[in-house]
Image 1 (cartoon, rainbow, N blue to C red):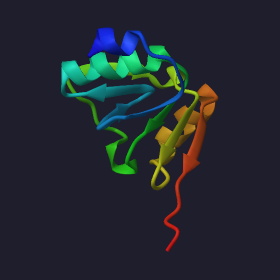
Image 2 (image 1 turned 60 degrees about the vertical axis):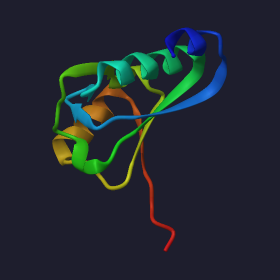
Image 3 (image 1 turned 180 degrees about the vertical axis):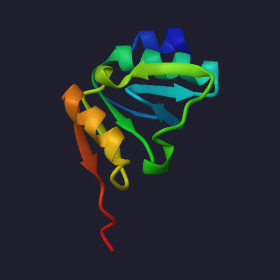
Length: 100
């Protein structure tokens, strides 16, 4: 997977994560981490997708510092302390809205 991704080029990679603690994204599967990192390296820009309930959680494997992403998209505002850390780091945060 990593070697196949190394030969690709993308304008934008959307990367999901099940855990964000502080200014770091985590994942429980090291194979997924390697594949996601390879996708990030193959792309000009990377956007992190994370459910708001996943802030304040960690997992075994570090995926990336949040500053490695051009933006973060979540479904609801994270806790105030998480939002403040993201704002201080200068990372664009978008709250996706349900169109219904």
